[in-house]
Length: 462
Image 1 (cartoon, rainbow, N blue to C red):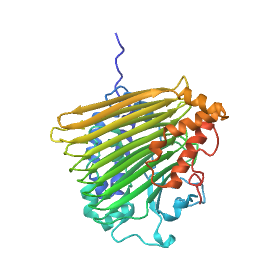
Image 2: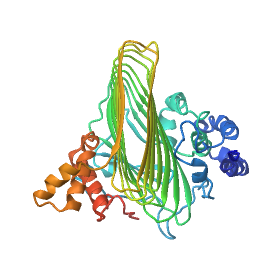
Image 3: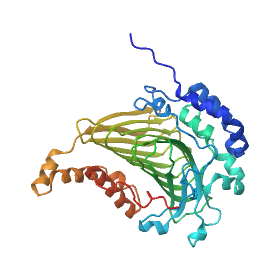
Image 4: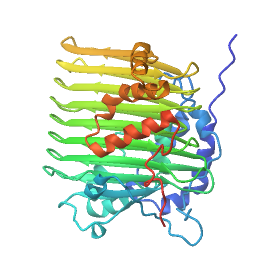
């Protein structure tokens, strides 16, 4: 007889913390954030945190991930060393740095680096920065969009985020506006004690508008961090968005991240996550088409070693006709690391002439690495073109032998083949300098060399 599964308990400490700090949170909270807390509290109390073995959580033990007693900086205390400012400056050594609109976050607090320091101005109507400032300029938009698509009643990590969030990064591009420079958001983790960091994004791209976003995550200290990140992304009719999320943290940093995306008719979206260094990462992509002739590309690369773990979950919902989606996720796994992919394409009966493709390819670079893949199709329409595929294997020995015969050392040849394996996902990045940097980081990870991150963004400058 199998042992009885123990009831979840990790969420209880967060319920207790919220109840003990509820008065303080309410007194210092924006109304738009506060409006969602009661629903989130009810959901977390009822559903708890996801347990290992649940349908969408087969391979990541979130209960164990959230069980340690992490601190939450609810009072936004200065976590920097004594005598220093709380908010850092940062420096990026890529040439694209001079062509970006910059924003930064220290732990859970978002800061827009104002154009007065960059000798240029934001286009009229565009907003980049904290929701604390956004509600002053666009209160109706904040109320209309915040908390509307994040599914707090299906995922306890979303409920926890919504319960404790105190700030959010906002990008708003009005109808018809093309943002020529990409927005670069650098998110830094810095604390002397273990910390749970609550992060939230709200991205609103108006009809026929266009924007690109680059997010860079860095851990400054070797403290244990747990990041709970939720992104709500709205892309209007005929709009375009390219968003790239680069995770370059430490082995002591764990992350659960959920992207919620809604796309209007004739819109185009590319959303890719690059996990280049981490402890445990769970990335969830939940997307839905709201109009016809929309296109979407989801992608991801993960490079893992040691006991690192990366879990990717996708659910792409085709509920309108004549839309196109592509998913391409690849993993390079070394030593005892593990990976997981669970992807579902849902096609409603009304979504005729849908084209949807899903591919998960994985390379095991050691005999102890493990990969678990579960591609799924759920189709209720008959006039569709849909496919899914999964393959997990080792390096091509014939190609390896060919390269060694031409004088390339075996280890270097293995690295070259591995980098080439993930090259098509890296190629989704439109910025050439950054593509080269990602390839360099992947190569150094596999060679065991430094740097294995963007060294300049990894420095905290007070």
